[in-house]
Image 1 (tube, rainbow, N blue to C red):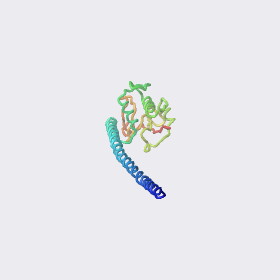
Image 2 (tube, rainbow, N blue to C red):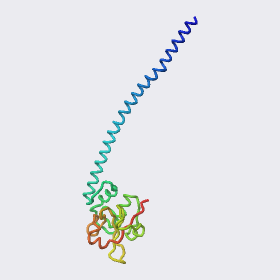
Image 3 (cartoon, rainbow, N blue to C red):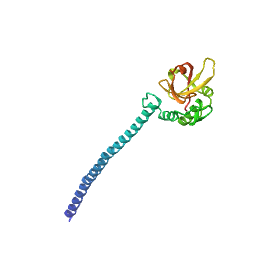
Image 4 (spheres, rainbow, N blue to C red):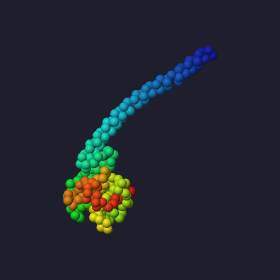
Length: 203
C-alpha cells in the first residue's frame, strides 16, 4: 500500500517537474518567436513608411526651395525659413500704393508690417521711422534673414524707406517704381542710401 502511494507521488512529481520545466519553455519559445516575428515586421514596415514619408517631405522641400530660389533670385542652402520665403514670394509683383498694405497695393512699411504679421505674428509700427526706433541695431556684416534694412537720402535726413533682408545682400521691399520686388544692397542707389540694419525681437 505504501509502495503504491509512493509510486503515485513519484509519478505526480515527475509529471509536475516535466510541466514546469518544459511547458513554460515551450510557451516562451512560441511567445518569443511571435515577438521576434512581430518585431522583425514592425521596423521594416515603419522604416519603409518613414523613409517614404521622409523622401516625400524632402522632395517637397526641394521643389519649394528651388521655386523660391528662382523666383527670388537667391542661392539657397535649403535650410532657410520657408515661411518667410513663401510669404515674400506671394507678395512679389504687388503694385506700390502709398498708405496701403494689401495685395492690391502696398507701400514699403505696409509690406513689411504685413509680412511680419503673417510670418511671425508680430505687429510692427506702421512707419519706417517708428520701426527703426524699436529695432536692435546690427552691423551690415551681421545681418540675418528677417532683419530690417533702412534707407535715408543723406546724413541728417530722415529714414524714408524700409525692406526685409533675405541673404547675399538682397532684400525684399515695395519700391515706388515697381512695387514689391527683390533688390540688392550693392545696387548703386541702395548702396548710397543704405543707413542701417535692425533686428526685431521675435519673442
